[in-house]
Image (cartoon, rainbow, N blue to C red):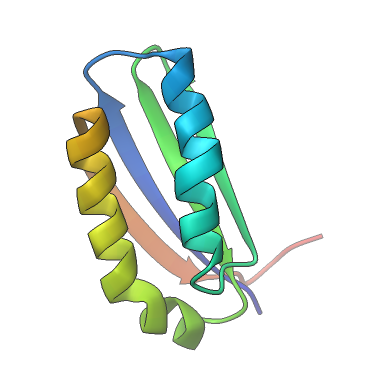
Length: 94
């Protein structure tokens, strides 16, 4: 079954141009590592989460080091703070 990683972030400010940069720069970077899909969802005025689907846990683990580098780069570029990160295998879906 699919494997997901979810990271929760807090921004210092919210700029619509940052959304464009995330879509045009960071989503393709993550996809290039073998992700099936990447979704960035605003959850509050200055909070958002990144949900990444992988074919399986092995694929996600292969990409983990690069994902850590991408997270660090994004954190510096946007002055965001990662609040938490979770991952796991899907056990039920429709």
